[in-house]
Length: 241
Image 1 (spheres, rainbow, N blue to C red):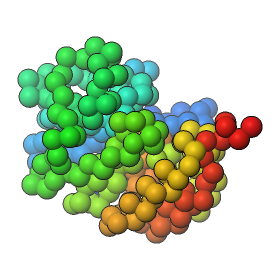
Image 2 (image 1 turned 30 degrees about the horizontal axis):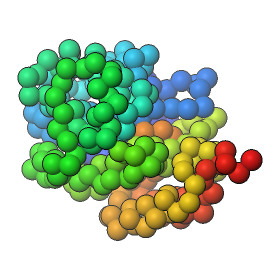
Image 3 (image 1 turned 135 degrees about the horizontal axis):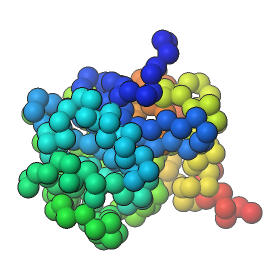
Image 4 (image 1 turned 90 degrees about the vertical axis):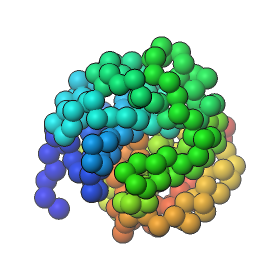
């Protein structure tokens, strides 16, 4: 594979862009994504205040901010949601909506953004003539967590699930990715069969890639491999002593 310039937006699927921040000194990376269809656009898990200048620069290299009609946030953590207060000013649309679950919104209200919500509980979201499908993933890791599936590109935006800690980060996952996922999921996800059962639900989806909010993009040839790996990870590590 040719070397990827992560200083620029990277198209990971048709009209689907990674617009994240790469820090060579960090072992933990955050991955916002931009979906574009005609004159409409959606940003997924836009990121933090410290990363905002980089994310905004990459988004503006592709579209005008005013084309963004929806901001999807899969849970409430500041690494993926705290820069909404800045983005909403640049987007400056009265019809802009933040898409999330009611449970998540109870906490994201504390960021102080003014944009109204469009709740996941209202059903799938029409975008560019297809419906983005929302799949609830409670307690992975948040009670209100969910994922987004785009049937057009067969892409699962998996939030923290399939995330990883890794030295020598790469945008695309390789065969050593399960080891990197273990470091993250072992202590970050709850004990029991919650994660394993969710893998069985994901297996029902036709996926060409998985785009997690942390870690690397998993391409089609590695999807089943990494699903099976997560079935075997022992979670709730801090309870194990």
